[in-house]
Length: 316
Image (tube, rainbow, N blue to C red; front, side, top):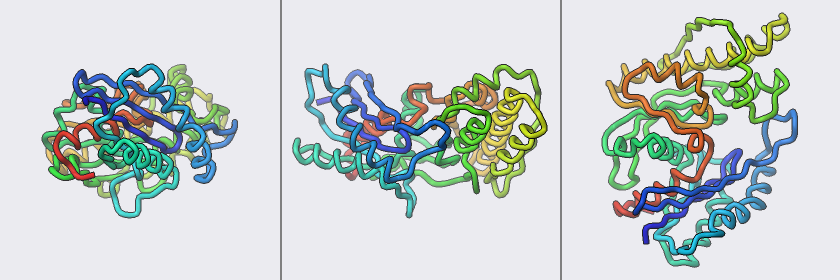
């Protein structure tokens, strides 16, 4: 049986995917969690409620026209990152469903982190899955993380992920959403902020300051708010926001390469679907980016993890 099912119940997407290891094809379904206009997110209790309602719909839509529903294993993300203390209640929704499906069908259950799922989805969509067989750097840039990690092959957990650097306060996705809401955009603000920034002719030269390779983005929100109060055009504020994030990520990349060596770098996470940021970072050699469908939260990488882990005999 070449089919592997993946489930992911993160903030802010309910998603499921099927990976066909024989053909390398993926089919996926996802549904955003509803956020009220003007608000910047959800409480975890509300996220759990919406995932509980949406997960059956997503899985039904994914499997509705599949003739062969025999899966070799099920993959699920159980926590945001693979580090001690990384926990969010919303992941219990996917884990509980995956446990029941695995038990009912008497097939293996493969657990991983949401971050590993993002990294594998990025490698898959960039046609760089072979990178996982040697050390490489990965950036996970979203509303909850602005992380650079060193990834190495591992016999037991398939990928050993070691933190290299991070944002010490505000995350890049949070900055994008806060500035977007400031400008009257709807959460999640990423695509609309990118479109708004494209209207600007302003040019900004940002020189970020890092601390041991780590960044700080809390000042960005304050700078954008001051620009707004000073009468700056919304498109110029949006452009400044993205220019700052791009410069910060580029500086973090340079610091990580100096620390870890000249390794390939893959950029994953919803923020990295931004074409402006990609143009800033693709100037460096040996870089790869997730395509838009595999940038935002998704279960595709989790399904791939189940397949790779099962095929290599990794632990559940």
